Image 1 (cartoon, rainbow, N blue to C red):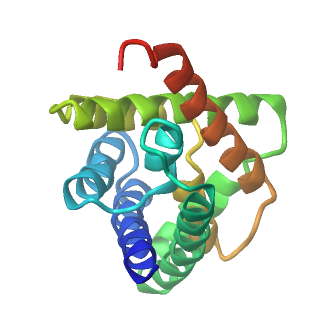
Image 2 (image 1 turned 45 degrees about the vertical axis):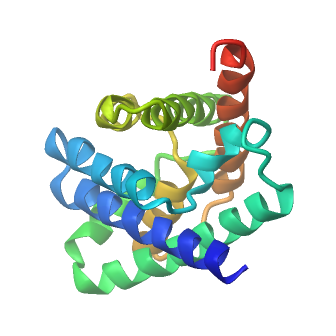
Length: 188
């Protein structure tokens, strides 16, 4: 249990660093630098909900473990974002503006599903020996405005607020990852 929690905190730290860069640098460099977070998660074997949920069946991940990963990613991510808001007040404005565009809508849900698809492909390609899925996939989902629940909770922490859109995002990321797994399971 301790290792599960520690690796989940580690993942939140790495994704928070990528998200910090995104908020600080903006486009076009921020989305590219953000890929550092998932590269670190994969290379260091950390527990990121969006990197694990598509492998729930394939890797025989226990649902209880996946829920702990999600909970720890969310709590640690929010806290890290909150801390960053004090370390660099300039990113607060960017985070607040970003959160203001989130809503509970079909469009937001679809963008969450699409992010889940990309996350599954990025991690699958990493498991198959290439980082190209991460290097191209992470900027792709950011440039397209797709929604990543752990990045979003970090942004909420930076903005010092909360949005129920995070629930839609979690569900969408899970569905997108599992859909991609389902439609590719015979070739994986």
